[in-house]
Length: 177
Image (cartoon, rainbow, N blue to C red):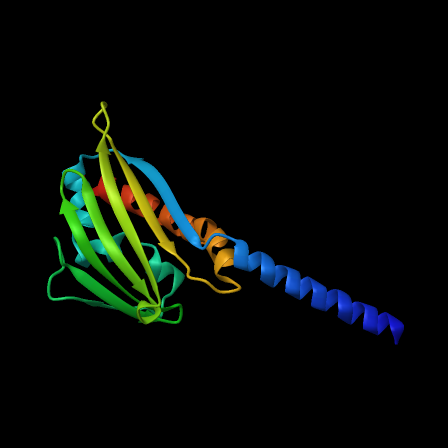
């Protein structure tokens, strides 16, 4: 009986410690991945700047085959949008900046707007003619006992998806070039 009481006390202290630490962890996160593509920014923008073409390279459907994407009335340029529903949750994306020379910026909402973040896919022309494509996302997980832990995991979770998406983009663009 004494061993059971000690184990329960240790478990309670552990749970409280983890919760308190979670309150002090930063809830802000930032994810960034890059790839070099053997193509010009304009060729890359044909795939990135038009949401109708995201299925050709974005990794989301591979992760959640149940995902149903609904495109907005406008699919390219500033104001282009899409929303989705799947086992992994719901979300919406709206392009806020778009240039065939420098890339796109977008606002992203998850779970009905509970989580908001900013993202971009930027193009930097390299001297050899290739283009460095950098995909970024940043946001704030809010304040809860677990938000800091989720923020710590975002680079690993989203970063692996960005790497897969950039690899897909590289393959699609270079085959089409």
